[in-house]
Image 1: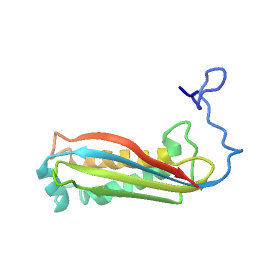
Image 2: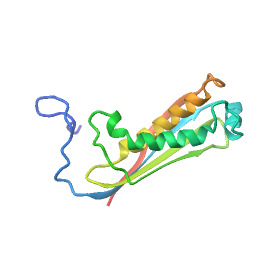
Image 3: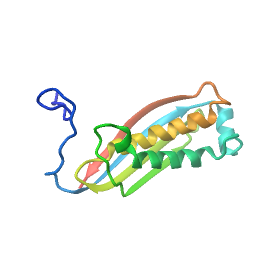
Image 4: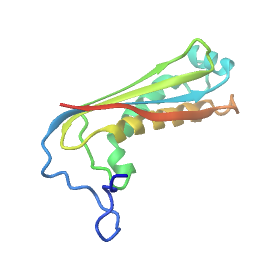
Length: 150
């Protein structure tokens, strides 16, 4: 197992020093799901959820969360991301919404936490906006799909 990068030689939590790392183009993609009833999906698609356009709100919440990741996670570097995208897919089973987020930056450190945060907050927004009509909502399978640098 590799050493933990956020622990100093005394065992204390610390921010990783990326000062000497070169600036590179970096991208990360994350994915997650919210499981729901088919009737709830119909309400979302027809924009008849009482709180409004669920997917538009979740998309904006995810993008805003990616921009605020450094404020939310104590040892994350605050990053000026250059692009973030949050998209939704509905499989043929119509029992879930798949959330896919990507984040890009030219920086000394990666943006995987930003992509993961975007997916998580988009899922929580979907949950919040639909919880009154669906007590079976379940957020699941949030994970990093890829990260690249060049």
